[in-house]
Image (cartoon, rainbow, N blue to C red; front, side, top):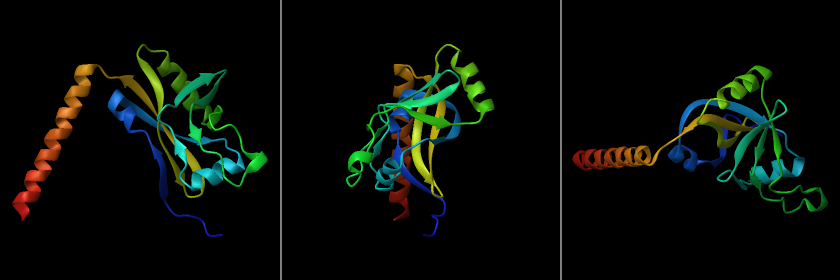
Length: 155
C-alpha cells in the first residue's frame, strides 16, 4: 500500500478562530483505535464541541466526536471518549505553565493526516470579547468587498 504524500484535512474548527485569539500552535498525535482511524479516513469527525484538558501531566482531548466505523461491529469504541494526545514532555510543561495564566486555554484547531499519521493541531488561545469579534467580522467584510471590487476591475 503506497503512503500518502503531504497533508489531508479531516476536520477544521472555524468557531475557535472566531471565539479566540490563537497565540501559539502545536502539532500533537492522537492515540486511536484501528476502527477510529478507518472512520477518520472516511472523513467522519467533528471537533466543534471539543476541548483539551491536562490531567496528571498528560494531555487529553474531550468531546471529539468520531463516528463509529460501519464495519467495525464489536471493535468500535465510544464516539465521544477521552483520547490521549501525544506531545513531548517539554511541550506539555510549557502548556501547563501557559494555561495557569488568567484567560488562556487550549483549543483544538484541526485534525488532519500527515503522511499516514493522524495529527491534531492545538492552539494556546485567549478569549475574544464581543467588540473584538465585531472587529474581526468587519475586517473580513472589508477584505471580501476589496476582493470583489478587484475582481470587477479585472473584467
